[in-house]
Length: 384
Ligand code: MG
Image (cartoon, rainbow, N blue to C red; front, side):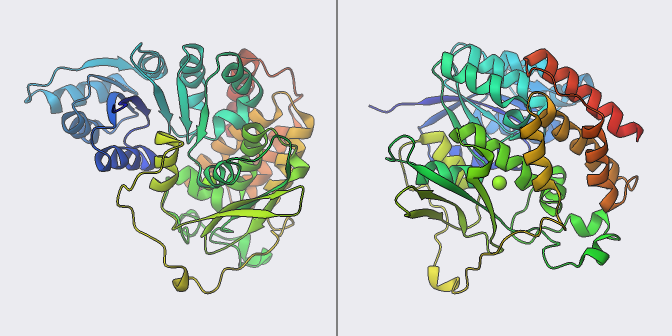
């Protein structure tokens, strides 16, 4: 008996979305793509819809929607279309859907993720902001609806893999690896003057603009510590960030008996995506293999927290609790946008996040409060 999994991909034209479709392509007969949501890339969406015969789509704007209809007009394929965040919610809650891949950029994924969980759908989560900003209500919803949240983030997939078969409460420490970003060896003085173009050059991973800048500031790792806290139910002081520039060890778990389990692989996101899509199975989809002898030098070092204050900011945000992590995340997204358009310096970027957090008093992290704090933080960060 073949078990066809019916999936929806939110953010289908981005880096994770296109790689998810590559896994679907590589494992024929295992998936049916029921819905695709894109922000604005109508051309790519139209070609995906034709290739995978997708019956439902959602786009970010009316303009993108008409561009998509125009693209598809010449074909015989009939598609039901939806619009915006509500459109993503509609796709995620279609009765036939088994699993929703959430790979949109930023906190916009919270609402559709909650909509999907409310309808009992499993989630494959790439948008870490959903757990950073709304960890408590999201995990609570997953628990009460008995839904799984499979991590796509490579480090969290690694941790998830290292945890297979482990008895409950046997974790001593999570060792979250970080490439260190493009400025690992840049001096504090030189860091004052780096440009957006320099920050956009990531040594090992090829990702979207927000994630790449977050990798340069280590904010990506800071967000990942909070993501790990929620996914694996551990405290912040049980998560240690380890800089590992080769990005071969994707993370580790140290157990209470002193044993450390690591997951290794080429830095290829299709591996964690595939694991999230077909967990707990492991099929050969023909992805490239790693020759360990090609990586004779795997190095590990502690992060320089004076050079990269974002890790401390994440601990502070969790200690404050409530809506503070949502504010940190939203302020960071706004500050990154400002940095990318040359409106903030590199040190000014994290400075802006600190300033917004200092101006916020954390409140209970209900869904409404989180969205309100998120919106406030973006506006405030833009005005600083
Ligand atoms: Mg990651």
